[in-house]
Length: 226
Ligand SMILES: [Fe+2]
Image: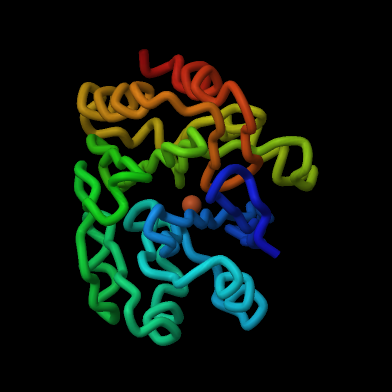
């Protein structure tokens, strides 16, 4: 059920209905140089998914994309893997008081995953503080809500709404996220830091994966910011 996208990199597309629109979401799984697994935006831990993880290695780190995106089901990972470390995006610990987080993600990766993964905190938004990840071995950028990319595989209704939100065949945040940026200079600096990575593939939080020329796609999707 996990789809290999690149060296040491897998994804799983999970159905997600948001306000009656079938949006879908993507979980990313990275096998670190240590052999342990780093899971971003975890999917529901079904027996099938657990078996798929078992084939790859031990789940060690579980990360959300932001305080809004990718933290559901973390409690299932805590229960299933005694040594797992749950990572919080800034602000998430206050929302998920039922969970004990091991780290709050900042702008510098922990050395235990820093060889393989770099990270940037996207700041300057009113309520979305996202953590973007860069998987070096596969040159992949991994996003949450600052990277929607709704393509032709989505249902018609989803495509129509995506067009209105300006994320139809375009990589970026839906328009309401654009309109609620608190500090544009800070937000722009964060996106520039992401663009400094030499990524080719992009895994969006919602929508379709961009296999190649992802950096160009991000530049085009964020042309309104520059
Ligand atoms: Fe999301």
